Length: 395
Ligand SMILES: Nc1ncnc2c1ncn2[C@@H]1O[C@H](COP(=O)(O)OP(=O)(O)OP(=O)(O)O)[C@@H](O)[C@H]1O
Ligand SMILES: O=C(O)[C@H](O)COP(=O)(O)O
Image (cartoon, rainbow, N blue to C red; front, side, top):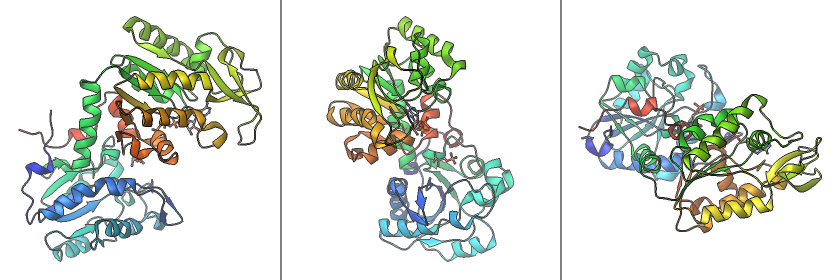
């Protein structure tokens, strides 16, 4: 069911509690990537233009229900103010009388950033009392925090029970891009699944195998598939208890007529380090005391070709240990293939793949980079996102 959008709301003079995902990476009090703040700007700008009184709420990090000075949202308020070109007031709490007092002084179009909602134990417990306390601050609830939509927390789910609610523009865009890809994909449709563990990707592989034309496997999880084919993997990542499942996925792909691609050659190393000795070998030849840390040149070529021939590609998870330059080549090759494939709609499923694309300076060559890591993964698994389900339906 389609959800109400902020366009469906009368916002003039209304106090809007707008949940955003400002969970940005920080080092020593400095924001190192403001993508998520930029991504929320269209909603905040619209609310402001419509004459709403804007209360922004977000989590930052995992303070586990306690005040952690280094996780206050003050640097985020400063950055937002620079980006939006107007003052952004900051509250030291996220609800209560002092906040109400601050809110009462705001005019139409003004913005107040509330304190980190995870400073309160009730947030992650989805405590109805906390949800009510948030709701008391406002007339309307807008959720633009796609990145946190897989969490049923007081500010992402609970509050929607007490206020009229709608999705913000970022939420809408994420849901429509990912939703269209899964329900009505342009073909050939290719999924590229990498990352560390099969365990984390079972749901997404299982769900996508029913929908795609090509399934490409890479990253640490590929070696459980290599083992399932009967080859030795040396010291590469291996989940013994998932070998059968890997075999079942390969069988299912065959039954469904899905073309299944896995590494043919790999880069192996004698140590998990930048300066390790490296070799390119075929997957039948991984020695006992070496580990495979990236896909090899032949594999890159094959993946490049499949990407070029696809109309839609969804990518989640790196092809190798991209944090080390020595093993970033496979992930970079996939990112470059997507950048070159101008007729291909490329969807990057957040998290590490988004970080990799950013690192290679190719972010603006992708069609859509999701702001959600866990959220986009759960969406691609076909799961209901509680932060979305809680919003009012479009009539
Ligand atoms: N061959 C490999 N051996 C060991 N580690 C690997 C290998 N390939 C990739 N990795 C590691 O996998 C990690 C990323 O996988 P992970 O499953 O945590 O994230 P992800 O797939 O991007 O998911 P999310 O989107 O939730 O961040 C990276 O840190 C990368 O170094
Ligand atoms: O960074 C994310 O993926 C979201 O902000 C959710 O954060 P969480 O995993 O701490 O709930």
